[in-house]
Image 1 (cartoon, rainbow, N blue to C red):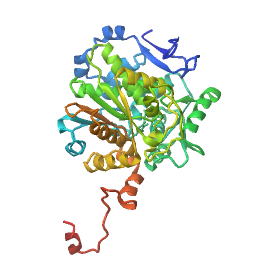
Image 2: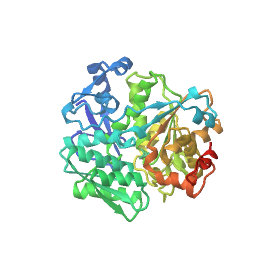
Image 3: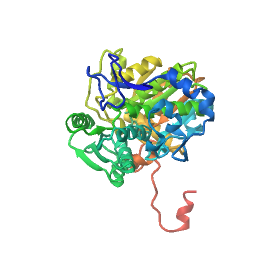
Image 4: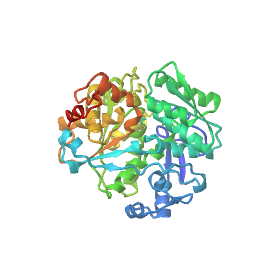
Amino acid sequence: MISLLQCIACGKKYSLSDVRFTCDCGSLLDVLHDLDALKKQFGISQAYYSTKRAKIQGQPTGGVWHFKELVLPSIGDEDVISKQEGNTRLYRNKKTAAWLGLDHTKLYLKHEGENPTGSFKDRGMTVAITQARALRQRAVTCASTGNTSASLAAYASEAGVTGLVLIPKGSVAIGKISQALAYGTKTLVVDGDFDDCMRLIREAQETLQAYPLNSINPFRLEGQKTIMWETLVQLEWRVPDWFVFPGGNLGNTSAFGKALHEAFELGLIDKMPRFAVIQASGASPFYKAYKNNFAGLVPEKADTIATAIKIGDPVNYTKAVRSIRWTNGVVESVSDEEILEAKAHVDGSGIGAEPASCATVAGMKVLIDAGVIRKNETVVGILTGNILKDPQSIVDYHITHKGVHANPPADIDASIDEVKKYL
Ligand SMILES: *Cc1c(COP(=O)(O)O)cnc(C)c1O
């Protein structure tokens, strides 16, 4: 078999067609590919991915399915459910670089908010829903801080499968809940937090056979790996010194580490970049575990304005620890004030992203000021979600609370003299 499921703790193997998310021993499962065989079969090399012009169902693909043989080699092209996710821009940005104290040639921001439903979740969703349909699952579910529900709703609709999303009451940004409703998936608003929703999803999988599309699903992570590979292709295979990104349920942390580990094993890169995972201080169990040499995860009650990372008991903890070890990575935490300050700069530079994404840039600032990230190093920051996902946070900052960089609107009479005052 070219791909299997393998337990990350005890190594026990299962078939890809087993519907399971954890090993008998209770640990998480990885999708394990036979990299040597795939490398030979496809002639995988830097040039292969830099020049490949693949099509899926007659449409040119890039993004996730550009890397199909390293994501889900077993699936037939005709069974892929895709909205051409990925192919996101890698921005240079002078204003943000200046605020960070970096030369603008040293900073890249990869905007995953430019995916079909406005977040990186689409990269994992296209793969996991494709697998769900291959396994003939009748219903797909997720617990969500918002973006997973938006993504699941769109893909369930496309795939023609029943979707059910569970979101925590009062903790989901308006743009995201709107999407879930509009795309037509039944949305359950749970009187509890994200971690309660996640517990219900795990129970629903066991007792109701509902197929979870959360990042506990190893196929989600296979799709999210492509954020790393796509960046490397965009950088013409120059490995940056750092990748910086937010950590919530730690799916990206896990997927990105696996992606680079595989790229290294395949000989696509000859050095590993370092990771900096950024958590909000009010939702920072991974940061605390890192400070404690990963002696163990202590779940906490999460609280932050960055609702996408408001998670106190991340399911991918053990895989994320592995990624930090593989990349000699660091974990940092930033306050809500630091997130909002960074967001004002990212938004004001004309790029814009939702609060959780701006934790990336807030964390960069802390690490650069502390000398952990040095000014001669190349840094790639991942912006995980679109600016329009959380318009309320923008209104609060610029109008209601008038933050330090607030740009409130002005009310004027309908006269040109009034207009002139502002020019
Ligand atoms: C889901 C999400 C995160 C958290 O990602 P994990 O992989 O769960 O750590 C961060 N930012 C945004 C915008 C998200 O939607």
